[in-house]
Length: 291
Figure 1 (spheres, rainbow, N blue to C red):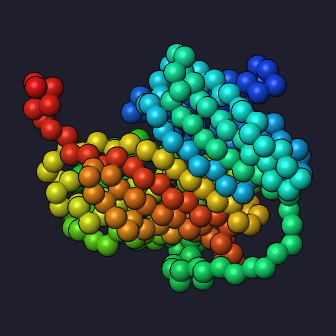
Figure 2: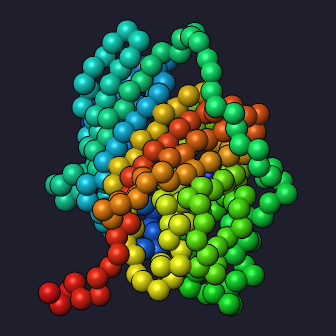
C-alpha cells in the first residue's frame, strides 16, 4: 500500500446490490487480512446505505475469523433503524459463506450541544521526529528480525512518527506511547472517507502498546497476536492529511488478552476520535502441534 490513492481505492467497495458490496484485499506479508482494512471497508459499506447528511459517530466490531487475502470479501448491510437523528446499521463481512467480521455502526445528524474534552498530551511535535522506519534503520544490521517486522507492517499511504524511541534491547516499560500519523499525500476527501481512512490507520500501533511491559519475555518466547474487537468513536471533524496524535495505553492484560485504548488529537489539541481494542496476546506452546 504505497499511495493514499491506492488506500482510497481499497476502501471503495464494488456495489453488488442495495445492501451488498464486494471488497478487494491488501496483500499483507503475514498472509491474513489486515484488521484495519476490514474496519474501513465495513464503514464504507454502511455509509452507502444512509442519508448524505448523516455522519458516523461510533462503530463496534468483532473479528470472528482470520481473513484470507486471496478471497474477496462480501459485505452485507442490515438496516436496523432509521430515525430522525440517529440511524443504525449492522455490517457482516463474509468469505467462503462464513462471517469473518461483524460490526454495528451508528450515524447522527450534526447538532449543537455542550462540549468538553481531555487535554492533549504535551509531547514532541512531528516535525522534529523521524518516521518509524527511519527510527529503526540504525538497527537494520544489529537486529534484522525486529527491523523486518517493522518494515512488514509499514504502509506508504500513512506516515507514522513515534514520539518514544523504539525498544530494541528487551527493556520493559509502561504500556503507554504516542505516535503522530497522517496521510502521505495532500487529498481533498469527504468526511465519510476521512472516517474510513482513520478506521484503517487506527489498527496500527495499538496492540503493540500492550507488549511494552513484557518486552524482556517476548525476546525469548514466541507470541501470537490478533485483534479480537475494535471500537471507534468519532467526536469532531479532522483532516487525515494533517498530523494527528495517537495517544495509546493498555490498562490491563490477562488470560491471553490485552486491552488497549487510544485518543486521537489534531495539532490544535482537539480530541477528534477515541479507540478501544481487545487483542489476543497468546504465548505459543511449541509442543501444541504434537499434542
